[in-house]
Length: 207
Image (cartoon, rainbow, N blue to C red; front, side):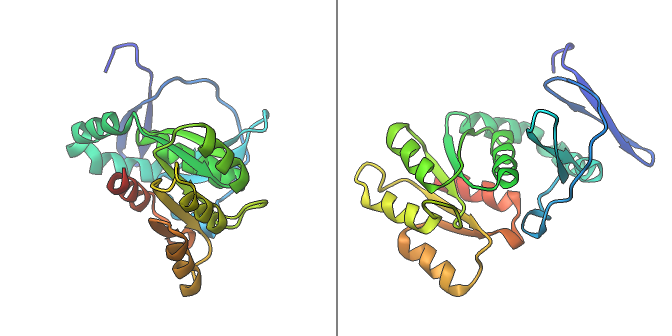
Protein backbone atom coordinates (compact mmCIF):
# COMPACT_ATOMS: atom_id res chain seq x y z
CA UNK A 1 0.00 0.00 0.00
CA UNK A 2 1.49 3.40 -0.99
CA UNK A 3 2.62 5.57 1.91
CA UNK A 4 0.20 8.29 0.83
CA UNK A 5 -2.87 6.04 1.00
CA UNK A 6 -5.26 7.40 3.68
CA UNK A 7 -6.48 5.00 6.35
CA UNK A 8 -9.28 5.00 8.90
CA UNK A 9 -8.68 3.18 12.19
CA UNK A 10 -11.77 1.44 13.55
CA UNK A 11 -11.97 -0.26 16.90
CA UNK A 12 -14.18 -1.99 19.43
CA UNK A 13 -13.11 -2.92 22.97
CA UNK A 14 -9.34 -3.54 22.75
CA UNK A 15 -9.26 -4.29 19.02
CA UNK A 16 -8.02 -1.82 16.40
CA UNK A 17 -7.79 -2.36 12.63
CA UNK A 18 -6.73 0.15 9.97
CA UNK A 19 -8.80 0.26 6.78
CA UNK A 20 -7.41 1.82 3.58
CA UNK A 21 -9.81 4.30 1.97
CA UNK A 22 -9.80 6.30 -1.26
CA UNK A 23 -10.12 9.59 0.61
CA UNK A 24 -11.49 11.20 3.76
CA UNK A 25 -13.84 13.90 2.48
CA UNK A 26 -15.66 15.26 5.51
CA UNK A 27 -16.92 14.64 9.02
CA UNK A 28 -20.55 15.35 9.88
CA UNK A 29 -23.43 14.25 12.06
CA UNK A 30 -26.17 12.41 10.20
CA UNK A 31 -29.48 10.72 10.95
CA UNK A 32 -29.08 6.99 10.40
CA UNK A 33 -32.09 5.11 9.08
CA UNK A 34 -32.08 1.35 9.52
CA UNK A 35 -32.66 -0.71 6.40
CA UNK A 36 -35.97 -2.51 6.02
CA UNK A 37 -36.35 -6.26 6.35
CA UNK A 38 -35.44 -7.13 2.75
CA UNK A 39 -31.99 -5.52 3.18
CA UNK A 40 -31.46 -5.97 6.91
CA UNK A 41 -28.95 -8.78 6.47
CA UNK A 42 -26.50 -7.03 4.17
CA UNK A 43 -23.07 -7.59 5.68
CA UNK A 44 -21.06 -4.58 6.92
CA UNK A 45 -23.97 -2.14 6.45
CA UNK A 46 -25.74 -0.68 9.51
CA UNK A 47 -28.17 1.58 7.67
CA UNK A 48 -28.32 4.55 5.32
CA UNK A 49 -28.62 8.32 5.41
CA UNK A 50 -29.53 11.08 2.97
CA UNK A 51 -26.80 13.69 2.55
CA UNK A 52 -27.44 17.39 2.04
CA UNK A 53 -26.92 16.86 -1.70
CA UNK A 54 -29.81 14.36 -1.77
CA UNK A 55 -27.48 11.42 -2.30
CA UNK A 56 -28.21 8.23 -0.35
CA UNK A 57 -25.11 7.01 1.48
CA UNK A 58 -24.76 3.64 3.23
CA UNK A 59 -23.56 3.66 6.86
CA UNK A 60 -20.93 1.03 7.66
CA UNK A 61 -21.27 -1.33 10.60
CA UNK A 62 -18.00 -1.14 12.57
CA UNK A 63 -18.44 -4.47 14.37
CA UNK A 64 -19.19 -6.28 11.09
CA UNK A 65 -16.20 -4.63 9.41
CA UNK A 66 -13.86 -5.82 12.15
CA UNK A 67 -15.22 -9.36 11.86
CA UNK A 68 -14.91 -9.28 8.05
CA UNK A 69 -11.35 -7.99 8.28
CA UNK A 70 -10.34 -10.84 10.59
CA UNK A 71 -11.90 -13.42 8.27
CA UNK A 72 -10.37 -11.84 5.16
CA UNK A 73 -6.90 -11.55 6.64
CA UNK A 74 -5.75 -14.86 5.26
CA UNK A 75 -7.26 -14.44 1.79
CA UNK A 76 -6.54 -10.76 1.04
CA UNK A 77 -4.30 -11.56 -1.91
CA UNK A 78 -6.89 -13.86 -3.48
CA UNK A 79 -9.64 -11.26 -3.05
CA UNK A 80 -7.49 -8.61 -4.73
CA UNK A 81 -6.73 -10.97 -7.60
CA UNK A 82 -10.44 -11.77 -7.97
CA UNK A 83 -11.30 -8.08 -8.18
CA UNK A 84 -8.83 -7.63 -11.03
CA UNK A 85 -10.39 -10.54 -12.91
CA UNK A 86 -13.88 -9.05 -12.84
CA UNK A 87 -12.77 -5.45 -13.40
CA UNK A 88 -13.64 -5.60 -17.09
CA UNK A 89 -17.16 -6.94 -16.46
CA UNK A 90 -20.02 -4.45 -16.64
CA UNK A 91 -23.27 -5.06 -14.76
CA UNK A 92 -26.55 -3.21 -15.19
CA UNK A 93 -28.69 -2.84 -12.05
CA UNK A 94 -32.41 -2.16 -12.61
CA UNK A 95 -34.11 -1.14 -9.35
CA UNK A 96 -36.73 1.56 -8.66
CA UNK A 97 -35.84 1.92 -4.95
CA UNK A 98 -32.95 4.38 -4.65
CA UNK A 99 -31.75 2.77 -1.40
CA UNK A 100 -31.67 -0.75 -2.86
CA UNK A 101 -30.20 0.54 -6.12
CA UNK A 102 -27.27 2.31 -4.44
CA UNK A 103 -26.69 -0.60 -2.07
CA UNK A 104 -26.45 -3.10 -4.92
CA UNK A 105 -24.19 -0.72 -6.81
CA UNK A 106 -21.85 -0.39 -3.82
CA UNK A 107 -21.70 -4.16 -3.30
CA UNK A 108 -20.86 -4.83 -6.96
CA UNK A 109 -18.35 -2.00 -7.32
CA UNK A 110 -16.59 -3.14 -4.14
CA UNK A 111 -16.21 -6.56 -5.77
CA UNK A 112 -14.56 -4.98 -8.82
CA UNK A 113 -17.43 -4.78 -11.30
CA UNK A 114 -18.26 -1.75 -13.42
CA UNK A 115 -21.87 -0.81 -12.69
CA UNK A 116 -24.58 1.20 -14.47
CA UNK A 117 -28.03 1.70 -12.97
CA UNK A 118 -31.57 2.09 -14.28
CA UNK A 119 -34.62 3.31 -12.33
CA UNK A 120 -37.06 0.87 -13.97
CA UNK A 121 -37.35 -1.89 -16.54
CA UNK A 122 -37.98 0.41 -19.49
CA UNK A 123 -34.81 2.42 -18.88
CA UNK A 124 -32.90 -0.82 -18.42
CA UNK A 125 -34.14 -2.19 -21.74
CA UNK A 126 -33.13 1.03 -23.52
CA UNK A 127 -29.63 0.85 -22.02
CA UNK A 128 -29.28 -2.83 -22.92
CA UNK A 129 -30.10 -2.06 -26.55
CA UNK A 130 -27.62 0.82 -26.80
CA UNK A 131 -24.70 -0.28 -24.61
CA UNK A 132 -22.76 -3.47 -23.88
CA UNK A 133 -23.36 -5.27 -20.58
CA UNK A 134 -22.20 -8.63 -19.29
CA UNK A 135 -25.10 -9.23 -16.89
CA UNK A 136 -28.34 -7.71 -15.60
CA UNK A 137 -29.39 -7.61 -11.94
CA UNK A 138 -33.05 -6.61 -11.77
CA UNK A 139 -35.85 -6.08 -9.29
CA UNK A 140 -39.25 -7.46 -10.30
CA UNK A 141 -41.76 -4.90 -9.02
CA UNK A 142 -40.92 -1.77 -11.04
CA UNK A 143 -43.00 0.87 -12.86
CA UNK A 144 -43.45 0.91 -16.64
CA UNK A 145 -41.82 -2.50 -17.16
CA UNK A 146 -41.46 -5.09 -14.40
CA UNK A 147 -38.59 -7.55 -14.06
CA UNK A 148 -40.51 -10.54 -15.41
CA UNK A 149 -41.56 -8.71 -18.57
CA UNK A 150 -38.09 -7.19 -18.94
CA UNK A 151 -36.50 -10.64 -18.83
CA UNK A 152 -39.04 -11.96 -21.33
CA UNK A 153 -38.24 -9.13 -23.76
CA UNK A 154 -34.53 -9.80 -23.37
CA UNK A 155 -34.99 -13.45 -24.29
CA UNK A 156 -37.04 -12.44 -27.35
CA UNK A 157 -34.31 -10.09 -28.61
CA UNK A 158 -31.72 -11.88 -30.76
CA UNK A 159 -28.92 -9.53 -29.67
CA UNK A 160 -29.70 -9.91 -25.96
CA UNK A 161 -31.04 -13.45 -25.76
CA UNK A 162 -27.89 -14.87 -24.12
CA UNK A 163 -27.52 -12.12 -21.51
CA UNK A 164 -27.42 -13.54 -17.95
CA UNK A 165 -30.26 -12.16 -15.80
CA UNK A 166 -30.40 -12.29 -12.01
CA UNK A 167 -33.69 -11.29 -10.35
CA UNK A 168 -33.46 -9.87 -6.82
CA UNK A 169 -36.95 -9.38 -5.44
CA UNK A 170 -39.24 -9.38 -2.42
CA UNK A 171 -41.59 -11.80 -4.20
CA UNK A 172 -40.94 -15.19 -2.63
CA UNK A 173 -43.87 -17.48 -3.44
CA UNK A 174 -43.34 -20.67 -5.38
CA UNK A 175 -45.41 -19.26 -8.24
CA UNK A 176 -43.18 -16.17 -8.48
CA UNK A 177 -40.01 -18.28 -8.47
CA UNK A 178 -41.42 -20.53 -11.19
CA UNK A 179 -42.39 -17.52 -13.27
CA UNK A 180 -38.86 -16.19 -12.95
CA UNK A 181 -37.52 -19.46 -14.35
CA UNK A 182 -40.18 -19.55 -17.06
CA UNK A 183 -39.30 -16.08 -18.41
CA UNK A 184 -35.62 -17.00 -18.55
CA UNK A 185 -33.88 -15.69 -15.42
CA UNK A 186 -30.63 -17.48 -14.58
CA UNK A 187 -31.03 -16.89 -10.83
CA UNK A 188 -33.79 -15.75 -8.47
CA UNK A 189 -32.71 -14.22 -5.14
CA UNK A 190 -35.24 -13.25 -2.46
CA UNK A 191 -34.58 -10.00 -0.58
CA UNK A 192 -35.85 -11.35 2.75
CA UNK A 193 -32.90 -13.77 2.83
CA UNK A 194 -30.51 -11.62 0.82
CA UNK A 195 -26.79 -12.12 1.43
CA UNK A 196 -24.26 -10.24 -0.67
CA UNK A 197 -21.94 -13.26 -0.78
CA UNK A 198 -24.70 -15.27 -2.48
CA UNK A 199 -25.15 -12.54 -5.10
CA UNK A 200 -21.43 -12.32 -5.81
CA UNK A 201 -21.14 -16.10 -6.05
CA UNK A 202 -23.97 -16.16 -8.61
CA UNK A 203 -22.25 -13.44 -10.68
CA UNK A 204 -18.92 -15.27 -10.59
CA UNK A 205 -20.66 -18.41 -11.83
CA UNK A 206 -22.50 -16.64 -14.65
CA UNK A 207 -19.75 -14.32 -15.93
